[in-house]
Length: 143
Image (cartoon, rainbow, N blue to C red; front, side, top):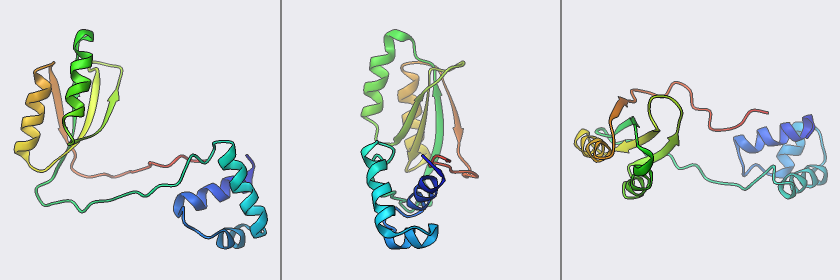
């Protein structure tokens, strides 16, 4: 991957629907050259696909939180099944440290969050942090 590939990827990360012609103009290449590079990066697996990021409007009562939970090894499959039953869980990370997992959750209300925490506590001790705001959101790699 060279500098031109990096520039193409950065532009596609900004707008995956950017026309090849526009990319070519921005990086001073011909459209066929840009198309060839994109096809090569797709073939190599560097570009794994194109997607849409949905950003639903947050309701006034919505609560985002991180729930850390300590799970004993014999409870792991029960915990993973529990995660599958709760659509409020948007991400879950298996981590090192004093807890086994950290779940990022999006609940419709404090009551919904409380119910979810109680469900987790049936399998192990928890610690919960309410997310007040997102000050950095880097869901894209840097090249």
